[in-house]
Image 1 (tube, helix red, strand yellow):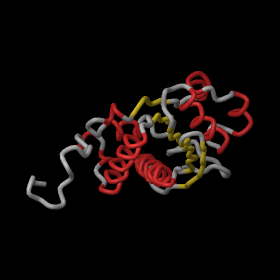
Image 2 (cartoon, one colour; image 1 turned 120 degrees about the vertical axis):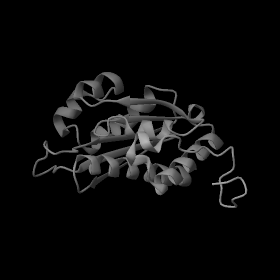
Image 3 (cartoon, rainbow, N blue to C red; image 1 turned 60 degrees about the vertical axis):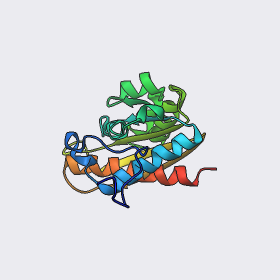
Image 4 (cartoon, rainbow, N blue to C red; image 1 turned 135 degrees about the horizontal axis):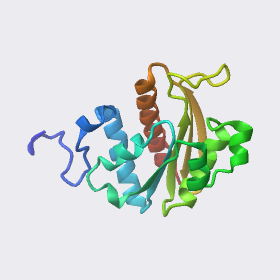
Length: 188
């Protein structure tokens, strides 16, 4: 984009810097979602925290790939193990034992824990089975639970993604950001 290009983003608009470092970032829809997320968070004076299991920090990496993200991204928790979910986010071990790490109650608790253990008002949490192993009849490979906390309101959803491990993780990243953007746009 050149400065005279009428479709160019204003200089103050955050832009992705290093798409080559994380191939999942090389996606126009993700870039649009992240740009809108950042603008909404800045306009409301809110901060974002992430709580990630199956994506291993990909959502935080995508957010912090935007220049100026320190103004709206507060912190990221990579809680891959059940113990990390309990120790860092306060997810009760009994909740994990009763429902499994890949479940609605755990995704909800992760989102709530990310807000409770940070200075953020908004959180996104993901917990899933990226594969190629670890799936079951009830929770096949590609099953992901999501949790979003937006200024005290928690929303959860589940999706089942197809493809290999990389594809499941990339789809999880994209859908987590797409839904976060939609939730922020509709938040009171």
